[in-house]
Length: 105
Figure 1 (spheres, rainbow, N blue to C red):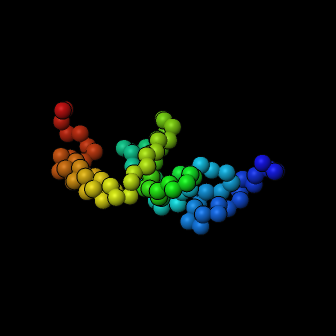
Figure 2 (tube, rainbow, N blue to C red):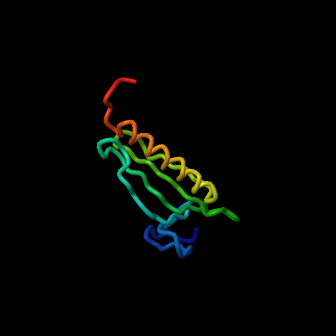
Figure 3 (cartoon, rainbow, N blue to C red):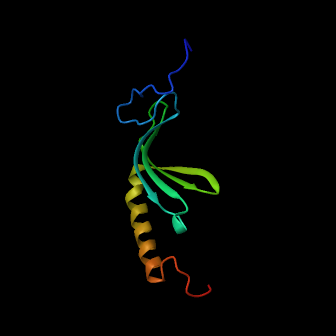
């Protein structure tokens, strides 16, 4: 290294929102309240590891008030099927009473 790295230096990858030194390029797309009683956020990003021939993936991050952030990279081709599964699960959960528990399981 020839000198200090500017923490605010823009990334050379045009779509990347990260600044300074980073190991993953990210484009932040959405943050949605995802927990019960608004107890956390779900983030959806484009992400690409900083390594040769790395694929651009869809990253989902989850933050909660009581635990550290967790993230997972999905292959872009698998996301439509995951979306369908989540939509079906949400519809079924709503049919069963949403987040309100009316009875014991």
